[in-house]
Length: 93
Image 1: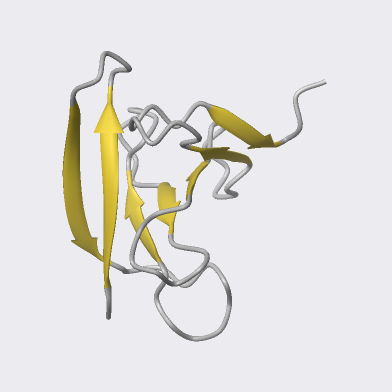
Image 2: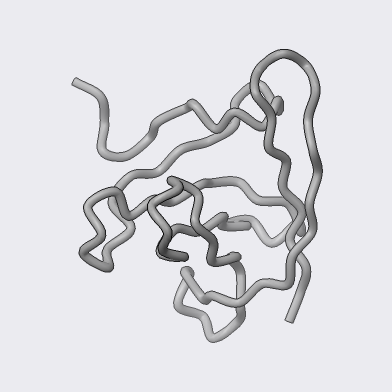
């Protein structure tokens, strides 16, 4: 199991870095590549931070906003400030 680094911030310039052991396989290749957590604050660890490219750093925050067990909203952290505001799925129309 590999560790995944990720950052949370409020957008004011201060960030907090974390490292957690990968405990989910989102790519389906049999290797853990994501960290399960409660990103949206609903009390369930049904969201994930995914290291899609395998470099040890989270690339996507995947959220299950309707609590149906499906990761249905994907976000990036385009400014590397830990705010995870770059929505990539579903596409904003």
